[in-house]
Every structure is written in C-alpha cells, then in structure tokens.
Image 1 (tube, rainbow, N blue to C red):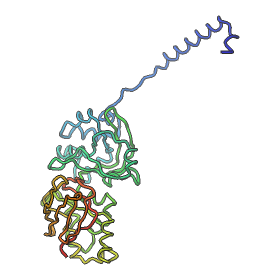
Image 2: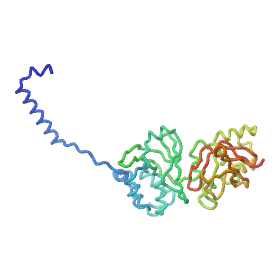
Image 3: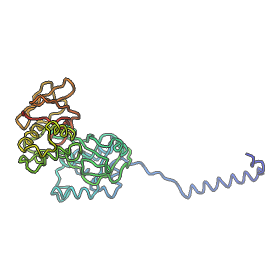
Image 4: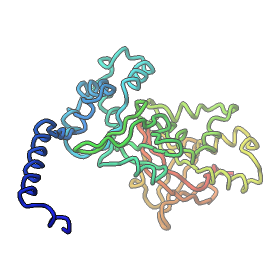
Length: 328
C-alpha cells in the first residue's frame, strides 16, 4: 500500500492491462488439462505391464470386467511376468487353457472388498483378511499378509508398486499370481506356525502331512487346529524335554493327527457345547463354549481357540494356544 501512491494512475492502469493480456496469452498457449479419473479396470488397461491381467479378466467367468469397474475394491494386480510364471508352473500353454471358472476364482483371490492402502497393511504388520474367492461351499477365502520384508501375500507374492488410486478403489501391482490357498499355504506363510511346520516335516514321519494338508481331493475339506510356536514351547516344558526330536515318531504322528478333522469344514459358528470332534488319530476332542471356544483333549487338558476361521480352499484353520494330545 505505501508504494501505490508513487505510481501514477495512468501507469497503474497500463500495467494492469499488460498483465491481463500476458496472463490470457499464456493460458491460450499452454492450456491445462486434467486427465479423466480411471476405474480399476481402466487403470489396468492403461498399463503395458498388466495386459495379461486384462485378458484374464475378459476371459474368466463372472463378468469380472464389469464387476471391477464398479463397487469399491482393492486389487492385487499380477504383472505379465507373473502370469507367465503361473501358466508355466501349472502346465498351461496360455490363458485359453485355464478353465474359466477356475480362472475367475483365482482372479477373485486378488480382490479385497473396500480400499486397503499399503499404509493400512504396514500399520497392521501381519494378519489375515478375506478375498472375494470362495471354497466349494461358498466361504470366502482368507489371505495372509506380512510386512516384515515388504508387503507379501500368502508368503509368495510381493507388492512392487503400491497405492495406484482408482475411482473405485486401489491397485497394488504384485510379482506373482496368488493361487488358491491350502491349509499348508497358511502354515508355511505364517511364522506363527514355524514349529508346527517343523513337526509336520520331520524326516522320520511316515504320514505325508504336507501332502494331506495340501490336497484338494479325497478326504477334504479338512479342519485343522493349529498350535502356535508358544504352544509347542509349553508342550516341551510340560513333557520335560528340550526339542521335538525327543518325541518318538509314533507319538508325534498321533499328536499331529489329533489336530486334524477329516471331511469337514468346521467353522467357529458350527461349534456347539459338548460337541465331539473326531480327529484323524481316532481320538475325539470335546468343545467347551463356557469360557470362550475351547477344546478339551482325551486327557482333560484344555486349549483355547485364539483365532478362528482362517479359510483355505481345502479346509479351515483354527489357531490354538495349547497342543492337544491323544490319550496318554
């Protein structure tokens, strides 16, 4: 304001006119355009590295192009290289050889309802969420994520480019196709079960536990009660030993079989008071809901179900805080 009184009115008007002319001239020569926002499918179509994903969405059952053009979703988008690896690993020459219903369910295993940003996953650290894929009974499949070393899903697929925002959600580009998970998938992906995996894979066991828990054929679905690492640590203390190797092979086999129920996908909501749960060892566990969901083994020992309904394609996992034992 102080300097204005030294500027003659005529000069001030000339400066204002000149400024207006220049500003308008610049706008005409360099018009600013804002690109139209893209939905999830359009975002994939705009990427040269997601052409296989687009082709898969077009080929699969379920009208997935239209489904993912609306609603609100988080999509884990495998790269072209990821699809090439998937096809080779499963013996397919190209996408046209993949059954369209199977392809649809695999693609839906990359879709999470709502918007989940990478910061949300990092804040959680590790855990389970649900995808839009289902098992044969229509139960939504679980998806394990761990952010200890990047953002990794089911122990196999890592986010390369995160948080590509779309009008109806967000896209995270991943480096592997995430196959339909089995119980073995979650056991090996989740470090909570490292001791369980060590027990299941002990070389002297004659029962092929990994094959059983990976199977999607005869005898499935399975229900597995999965003890944590701490649960196994407590068992060693209880037995007065230092290592799982000190448990003889027949006893360990019976113990592990007592954690698996055959031909049944028993979810938490299916459990009832005093329900007898027959296991593959021939022993039954008894359900007690009095103080929260608990399992009572044939020896009267009580194990709490501390997490439930981790849903795999071939069955369901419930996490327990004590190893259950067959009759000793």
